[in-house]
Image (cartoon, rainbow, N blue to C red; front, side):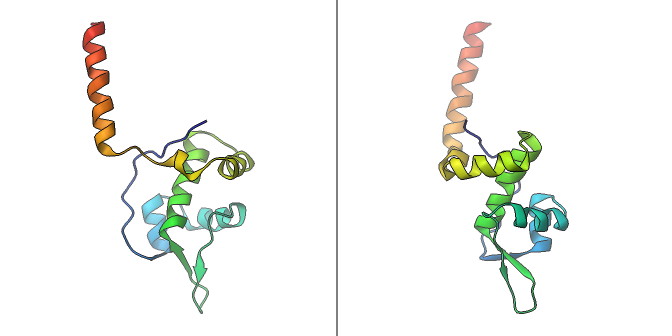
Length: 115
């Protein structure tokens, strides 16, 4: 089974994100992020000396994948954990924008042929 991310807000190009920034990017409450951190090993934010979480871009990408699996594909948490463990990271990659445009054009041509 291949899962693709749905287009979401762009993730800023920076090293670390505070939990408030991640909640804004993912549109998830902070308590959900903290819970998922305990359920999914792919989410492992660093901690500052004061205990504040610092998420890397890969953590944010993992959160978006998990959100997609749970909220859109209706996986259970154990099911999503198993899926993430058994599927390669490439299965989540979006095709390049040019490929999407090419596919849209081909589908449009097929639609015209069918009309």
